[in-house]
Structure formats: C-alpha cells, structure tokens
Image (cartoon, rainbow, N blue to C red; front, side):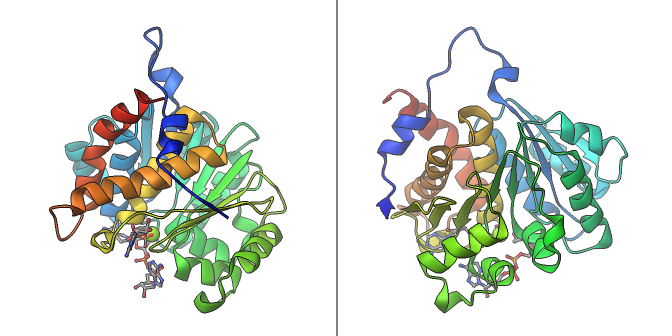
Length: 282
Ligand SMILES: NC(=O)C1=CN([C@@H]2O[C@H](COP(=O)(O)OP(=O)(O)OC[C@H]3O[C@@H](n4cnc5c(N)ncnc54)[C@H](O)[C@@H]3O)[C@@H](O)[C@H]2O)[C@@H](O)CC1
Ligand SMILES: Nc1ncnc2c1ncn2[C@@H]1O[C@H](COP(=O)(O)OP(=O)(O)O)[C@@H](O)[C@H]1O
Ligand SMILES: [Mg+2]
C-alpha cells in the first residue's frame, strides 16, 4: 500500500506548451443531471472545466440548460434524449457518466448507448447513479472502453460488489474489482474519509488528506469531473487518478483552514491556482 503524496501533483501536472490549442487538452462529455439532480452534473462540469479540460460537453435533461450555461458557459449542451448523443460519445476522449443521472428507464437507455458507442481509445468514468444501475444489471458496464474508472462511495461499492461496508478490506475490494471487470486497465476509486485507489494488478494507493468539511452533497460529483478533466489532459493511468484524488482533497483542506464547510463549487474555483503552482514545481 502506498500513501499518495504531494509529489504526484508535481509529476502529473505539466506546464502548458505555447504551441497548443484546446484540442490538445482533451474532449470530455459529462452525462447526468435528471430533473431533480441538475446540480450534480453542473458541479461535475465545474470540476472538469476548472481542472483544465480542453473542450467540455454535457448531456443532460433540458431543464438544466439555462442553469448550466449561467454557471459554466464554457460547456456545450446536448439534450440527453437527442439521437446525436451516440455520435457525440464516439468523438470524445473521456466520458464521465452518472452524477445525478437517476434510476429511470431513460438513464438505463443512456447506459446502453454508452456501452454501444465507446471504444478502445476512450476512458469512461462511472459515478453515482451509473454505478447503482450497473449494480442492478452488470451488462450495462461499458466494457469496450479502453479504460474504466469507477468512483463509488462505500455505499455504492456495497451495492456493486455485494461487500458490506465493514467488510470492504483491500483484498476483498481487489478481488471484487477483478471479478467485475477482468481487465487490468480498470481503476477503482473507493471514496471515504481516506479514499483508496486500486488497480486491477492489486496496487493500492491511499489518500492521507481531506477533511470532514468536505462531507457535503456534490463533493463526489466534483471529483468525478476533476478525474475526467485530468485524464483528458494527462492520460488514463493510475498516477493521473491519484493526482486528481489528492488535488481534490488538497483544495478541500485549503478551504477548510478558514471555513467550517467546504462547498464543492468553491473547491472547483481554487483548482486552477493549485494546478498552476504544481505545474511549475515539476
Ligand atoms: N445537488 C445534487 O443534485 C446532488 C445529487 N446527487 C445525486 O444523487 C444521487 C444519489 O446519490 P447519493 O450518494 O446521495 O445517495 P446514495 O443512496 O447512493 O448514498 C448516500 C448514503 O450512503 C451512505 N454512505 C455510507 N458510506 C458513505 C460514504 N463513504 N460516502 C457517502 N455516503 C455513504 C450514507 O448514509 C448516505 O446517506 C446520485 O445520482 C448523485 O449523483 C448527490 O451527488 C448529492 C448532490
Ligand atoms: N470526512 C471526510 N473526510 C475527507 N473527505 C471526505 C469526507 N467526507 C466526504 N469526503 C469526500 O467527499 C467526496 C464525497 O463523495 P460522494 O459521497 O460521492 O458525494 P456526492 O455524491 O454527494 O457528490 C469523496 O471524494 C470523499 O472522499
Ligand atoms: Mg456521489
């Protein structure tokens, strides 16, 4: 087991070359945000954009169009019922699916489309409702994606792995990950006060930072977006995911120095400054 440290940020976050454009920093599509959970996909999108995604698109319920554009005009919008969703998915580097997606039949259909349209070169980050739907039907897993990153909290992992929270030991978690996805490219980010990152080969990375001010709805949605944005720029390896987990908590700790509660939307705002600092320390 390895403890994640600040060094991972210096290693992963690169200074940007002058001769580059938005196409060099990845295309991310975020899918989620039902009528009742629009905030989840907006917070996720804020995480992705503030972590530096080159181009960001959001597939969501049409009710979310105005609030999404009011908060993040950088993001493009598509109605999640639009037939063009399939082609959009095919053109993405990273798809983050699940924040506020909900458990409807439409949400299930979206997972079917995602499974059909993803391919080897793409990374899919699965969070929240997407994981709960997959718990009900494992055939919904988008196994054609080259890289799969699962980001459950302990209750979502209990539903998915059938391992009750007190029995979620490292060895049980690795066995369950390998059983669920017999592919060493899969990563499991098991969120708790000390999030563990596992890969299929049995490596374990533990996040030693973060704080209970971060126990606020939307904090995981934000992390899923940050992971998507960082994978889009720095690749889908386990080091990128460790860096995203550490950066999220570091931002949370920075805000918790003088705030009782850390709002996910405030956390996203401090990411560009932190990333700048670590890009220069490489
Ligand atoms: N503003 C919004 O629109 C929000 C929407 N959300 C969406 O709401 C849907 C349901 O997700 P929830 O996660 O709220 O509901 P869940 O029912 O999946 O899990 C929440 C419950 O799990 C238990 N739990 C045990 N260990 C935990 C751990 N380590 N971390 C977190 N919870 C733990 C807690 O009792 C908690 O109330 C998802 O689609 C999610 O994305 C949430 O992300 C909250 C914010
Ligand atoms: N007590 C805590 N200490 C450190 N980090 C925490 C704590 N509580 C929550 N977090 C972090 O906040 C996030 C919560 O994720 P999640 O439960 O999926 O939130 P949501 O679904 O509401 O967005 C995780 O990254 C978790 O590590
Ligand atoms: Mg969550």
